[in-house]
Image (cartoon, rainbow, N blue to C red; front, side, top):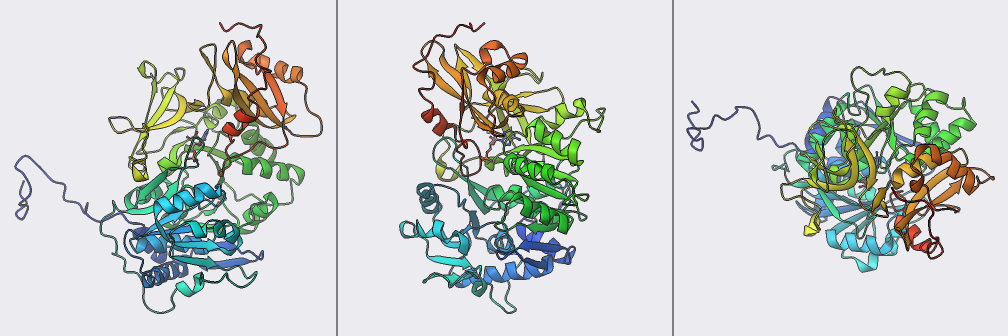
Length: 561
Ligand code: AMP
């Protein structure tokens, strides 16, 4: 190897001669947005219902001056700056301005229980909190219990700012000073933090490095991923306080897509109006949002022009077939299903159809579209059953394990709790089958199975089937204690209309699809299913509520085979 000044190079090495040392930082994304895509728009719905518009050029200037303002408060590399905020341009400035300074942006979920909020703000040792004025009640409930030094309020014009707080606009210092582009030299340093939603126990901190966020943003441009491009307008409904809004703000800025940020109005009508007027091409959110949007579109099929919308990215929970097919068959809109977790930044897998399958509407394509898809480039998957790793046969279930450059390798504070394998894979807690082409199908979660007489029953499969009944709007299937079978499934349902289908009707509806011992022992109707802060069913609460639903456990007549 003829590298004259390479004292460190051993005889048996042959180093690549590329610029591998250039750090992959979020500032790199900012620089590209501010130059190549300087005139691309960022549109925000403001609290009064108006629109704030500016360009990536203006956004970048303000983000860098926010960094200067934070530095004037004594914030420096490694310090945590938290946000309690919805999707708007000031939050976007924090996404770039805080990491540009070498500090860490900790997005906090305002829907969490105050106890959890106080716990995570304390554990993360947040020094500054940037809070939307509308979310002040959430913050004021815990501000006395946490060690935050400065509270910065994003004013919404509804009244004076609370005493002792700083105005966000005063922190975006006017003048020539900007955070330098090279403030972060090591791309392994943390840029962002987000806590998991805590469906089972206390939320856990996930700490994203600059490098992981840049690689993840690059991946959002793949055509078999979300395919973000300079011709897109992206409206993330998924909140910027949860998993970096699925990485879409960074992806959009890197690939030159415009951004549309809906602020505090997440009503179906408000979102549809924004999609229409901005000509949004890509939008993203959890299924609950799309169910409401589908109902609004069904009620007023020609009120909004969505002809530009090419992709509705759905994830966070399985997309019901009725939603995917309803958008396509009645409105000509394409749903793209994806799987991910807070721990995977979140892009894990995306459900495009493979080569050789008709891309048009039809059952063959839907089999793939309704799966959790194939792993994103640079994400590796495997699944482990009781007897070890399972074959990729599309049949044998096992717990999904993943690894890749944007997958967590530890939780913050060493809270790992058996979630990582000895050889460095992350254990997702999702139970999947993997087919020979790498398509994942989530059949259940380790925390969510019903074990009846030693046999597993998939609550997810029953829920999906129940939700395709026209009389059922929502269904959660839970395991309820049973004296003979240990556990039996009980379905907790929300009715779609005034008329509730009878238990017999529901059982007859499910019967052709499932072994008869899979059918729920009871059906219970509720006004609403309790949810976690991120919209998932809070099964623990339901299990508690319906603990005695089987009346101490009447004997079943059906035998488990
Ligand atoms: P969170 O970290 O709160 O985003 O939750 C991640 C979990 O949500 C995963 O482990 C899955 O259980 C579930 N999830 C995410 N995406 C999907 C999907 N497309 N289908 C089914 N479950 C999903």
